[in-house]
Amino acid sequence: MTSTKGLEGITATESAISSIIDDKLTYAGYDIDDLATNSSFEEVIYLLWNQKLPNKKQLDELKDALAEEMDIPDEITAHLKSYDLKSVNPMAVLRTSISMLGIFDNEADEMEEESNKRKAVRIQAKIPTIVTAFARIRKGEEPVKPKKDLSFAANFLYMLNGEEPEDLEVEAFNKALVLHADHELNASTFTARVCVATLSDIYSGVTAAISALKGPLHGGANERVMAMLTEIGDVDNAIPHIEKKLENKEKIMGMGHRVYQQGDPRAKHLREMSRELTGLTGHSKFYDMSVKIEKYIKENKGLPANVDFYSASVYHSLGIDHDLFTPIFAVSRTSGWLAHILEQYNDNRLIRPRADYTGPKNQTYKPVEERS
Image 1 (cartoon, one colour):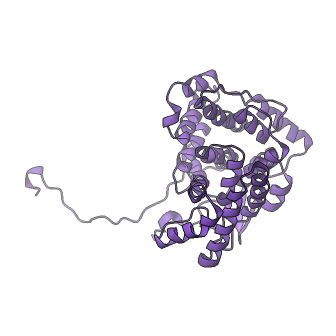
Image 2 (image 1 turned 90 degrees about the horizontal axis):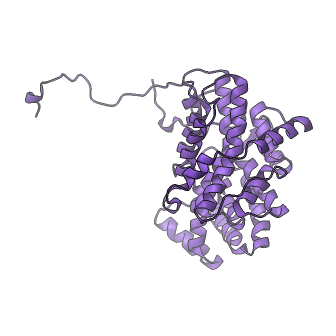
């Protein structure tokens, strides 16, 4: 056997959900540019779960099903109110809350295809409600119940802020959800598939995925981009700040991507939304800083911006707390996780790789009295 650190370049499974070929990202064969420009997040959910776009009847049925399932159990809300939310990691709260949801689902351990699809709808519908309830409760505010006549993206912003968002805000957030929905066999998706390959339940799979996303090498890059922009403070300070970071051999977050050589195809869509939103909300300096940094890093390091770089200023302009950026990533990526979980169940084989042994060999047991 020959080991490959980090499984880089290793093909671990077959999938019909998304692909990255020659820096081109597709969902079930649809180019991400086409989807980001034209589709709703609900359409993308259906596409990922069924490998085809819905007709109007199918889309309406999915929207209705999601709307019906957005409320969360009172016990989850009570749990969120039971400890000091200001001192805990939001991803830890989300991880625990999704795990708790399984306790209140009487189908949790059923493995039939139709019951798993129903559970997928419940999880996808409830995760934005959990995130927004957490965001409000820690500020001393009551959670806002979802409105059945709002889109998925609009409902999230409504439940977060307590007022219906502007059209541009909905467009920007919907686009971010579409762009983050799936990304082939990334760390959290692979974790979800490994988990359910044991025939563990769907709630365990999503909980495992959230646990992987919580790690700073996977989720949270856009939060750290926003921290950097806030630290820079002014457009004129952008390049001197970056030069100092590079001198200290610090990583510039939001630049480059392990699987893209020429650039992340998702970044340009959020770059444009950042330009429009920051202009609307009076935060243009963050967009201007980002443009200067992107240009400098690309010219000096050959690294273009990835999807996280401009999503930071987009979320900031929407009034979203910076430590909620990764939970929002999870709200979107849940659609992809669930697609991969359902696909794994449909053609399952236990995932059990091997490891190259590098420890000592030919040792002989000695009684404890004879050991030095």
